[in-house]
Image (tube, rainbow, N blue to C red; front, side):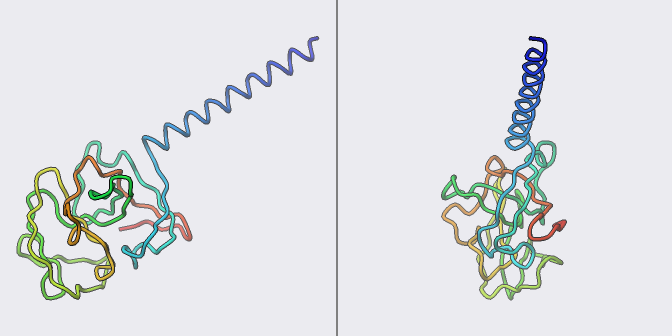
Length: 174
């Protein structure tokens, strides 16, 4: 009888540990980190199609998204679809594409993360309060704020900041 009790006690303790680990993993997945696969080439050369990334869900709890951040967000025209783009315009900015370059508040943007120049100009957009203007790094092959019916992403629709690609290689993103 004592052997059976010991086996049941050990099984109970192991079950509690497994349950705790599952609950902790679920809490982390839903509130701290998320993993996703990049479905399109809109962020190439920075992040390639099929790459796997980590999304920091807590990045914007105490901070605001900044120009240049790579973020995951729910697309304004289909809130079930997760997108990955770079923040180009923050609230109050005027953003425009002209002569192959992106201009923010009348000044050309220095972008060390992409060498791709715009093939088409785009009209000026004024970014509303609590919203962001998004562009893919692969500017000429990106479905982004320039083309959406709702051109801006609300802060509440941003899932988090992306800083790490972990597949097919480990890479810190800038």
